Image 1 (cartoon, protein in one colour):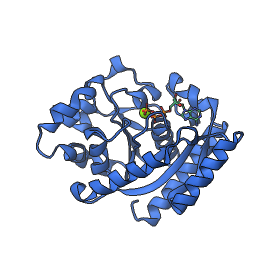
Image 2: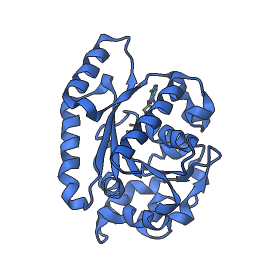
Image 3: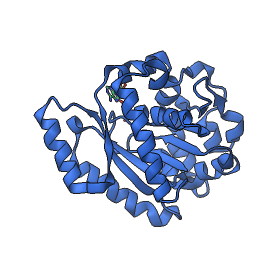
Image 4: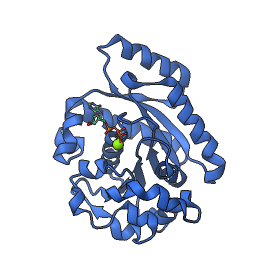
Length: 257
Ligand SMILES: Nc1ncnc2c1ncn2[C@@H]1O[C@H](COP(=O)(O)OP(=O)(O)OP(=O)(O)O)[C@@H](O)[C@H]1O
Ligand SMILES: [Mg+2]
């Protein structure tokens, strides 16, 4: 299964979820690849891969200068493989737009190595740029993380609508695996209200698992380690472990794995 983490909004937990969900899959014995498609490189950083250490990145893979197999590196964490990103990706919009079928470049690049992995998780930048469109075109399914304290229900509906509109252009379209509530803090009444509103509006589309606000999740990236390696008994680790199980059950039901 190829799974994209996407949302128009920034800072909602896309990267935290991409990294730790890939780690949760790897822990359950699956061969996992994390693709960093964000020029900021936060997912690469979160797995301890510094910008200076990146020899070939997703930018060169999209442009066709390198193959995915050449750019992928191994990490010490449960055998997760990483296709790292680079700042160069930031200029990719213009360069890629001139290519033939610019929205299918990632799909094409991953095709030769797809069979090596049980799951490929793609971390997207915020927004719906050509990078995110590439991730959605390559994906079988996508997850939309939302943070209740920054939630804009209209923007969420807008993003889901845009993803839906893209479907015919993307060929075999990605399915919404689920909306994920992240950074949930039930100590505030506002959170309870927003969580209830999202669950009412989207029903079973919302993962049962909620990711709580957890300082360990915020600290782990600077250590360059997934949460299971950094703080395996934290509430964050327990939540991402549970999400891994729920995501796999959903994927099996939809016959994606
Ligand atoms: N459950 C959580 N508890 C506490 N902090 C969190 C949690 N999830 C994410 N964070 C922190 O919140 C910030 C934003 O999270 P993250 O980088 O995952 O969001 P993003 O959607 O990928 O952002 P961007 O749009 O900039 O790529 C980060 O500093 C991260 O460490
Ligand atoms: Mg991010």
